[in-house]
Picture: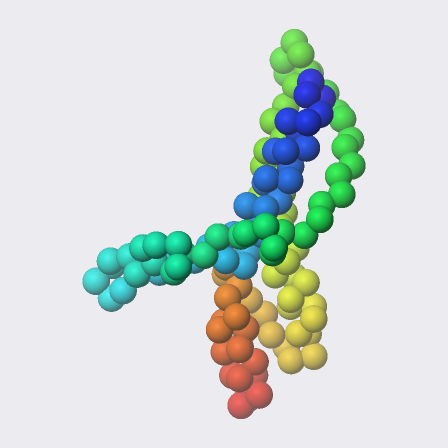
Amino acid sequence: MINPMIVDGQVIGGTAHGIGNALFEWMGYDEGAQPITTNFAEYLLLNAPEMPHVTLGHMESPTPLNPLGVKGVGECGVVAAPAAIISAVENALSPFGVYFDQAPLRPMEIVKKLVNTKSD
């Protein structure tokens, strides 16, 4: 790592963005394809109270593809967080046979799945 503080910030920021993708950031449109989430009261973002503490560990593996051996690191949390969070919710709701195929996983989507499962 060239600058560990920057790497830590990128990983934590990426994790926050991934959590937001999984649970909050939904862009809605009406039947005329006009956006209905046009402000931050409707388009939710992750805030500090929702952000869990992140403990970091690093494993360095320099690349042979450039003279410095450096790679990007900012995408680490963004890619894994939605799949991990949605899988955890599915696991918690496994007795109900509930599965999800989209993000963000909004509360009303969870309730809809549970109600539909109970009526089957």
